[in-house]
Image: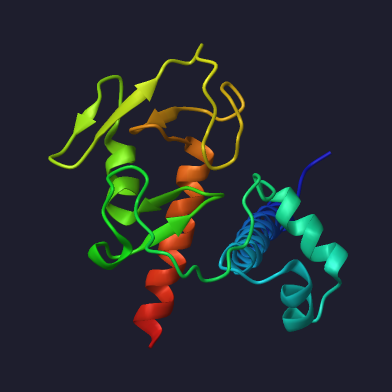
Length: 183
């Protein structure tokens, strides 16, 4: 049997277009799910997000759980006390952005610094961040998970943040920057 080269070429081209479309759809779905998650972590309840997007509360819950869940984080109302970064001690008015966790906070500068921690600690004039050994029993101050469920763990003075929560902080900070640049 002889394969028709023209039809074979069409099939390959169609297959390539289909693969591209599937990748684009997967990326759009991931972007949508991350946007839903950021809305919730920015302070909106799951019910508020559902109403605003005209989808069910259950669907919002499924999306948030599928993209990593709440990790023990709770939406925060605006606090009246002076807030400060738990890692470097700088008050909110002296940092660009401050991300809240359950009773702990991390500024945008410490988020960036935490990314620099490798096998050796990183130190600035305000703080020192150390890698936490993988066999440690310490847990993340933001989500409460302990290694190995958290990936790498970085410790500051009395607080810790895991790789998952650090990525979530990156997402939150990127969303805030995006909102500010649109204004």
